[in-house]
Length: 395
Image (tube, rainbow, N blue to C red):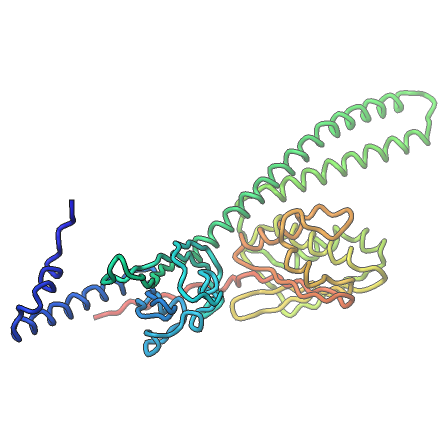
């Protein structure tokens, strides 16, 4: 069963019978229909390109021009290989074939011009409408381009979030399991201590050893508790917080470690009271991790500088060390879970820093050079920054 002819086909079939008036009416109808189709194509969110058999663009809708950076005056008979070489290569136009490929092509790819984007390319051949079946059929190409940048970025973020969540669950499980034997050891050590205390003859050496064991077990238990609190995603308890107080408390916690490595800490307060809305415990974790990294990076006696200051919308803290530095290759991966260059590192410290800073509406930046040292910049929204509302107009 043959498909019915369209009204246009019927009219074109009687062109010889049309007089001048009816021919003018037909041309107007064709122009009107073309304008309607172009309007429809221009409001479509996908980019549409039509190529001839040589690979030249014969039509492009607005989104198509936008995606490949084509100007209005360049919109026809421009080679796709010249206008968008990345797309042309993806569909095989750079291979020097005499004719265009007649296969359907689907690609997801990254383009760098005019903007860095991810697009999905669907290319399908178009046969010449008026070529007889027995003749050689020249083939053009219709290309539909869908901007999937947001979809791609969203998917990557979701995968990263799920990966981080899985690591957090695993780490929490391991820490919890370590806590059980530690509690048991602690209980038995307390029993041994009571037995030693009950004896009339004191064994000073054994008592000291036992006390040392109890202290170490309690310290390990504290580390695990601190670790679990740090990695479990928790809503920050926002309160007015003085960053200088947080920094001083963190440096005090690191006092013994700093002393062992003969490292001094220099405070340079560019603002007297850097008050922000923050969770003091989470912020301590941020500075604890960053300061710990700085200490480990320093191989000899040195000074860690901590500089505070104000920007237009942010309070910043810079932790500056003159340690080994971080290579360019490693610098791009420091926030990835389980990525570490240390033999004894666990690779989640900076990931936790990044999460806490993000939850506080801030950000963290790292500048580093091998052999010169590292600068970690923490930026927090200023407490005084508020959206400005329009004043109510009175009449």
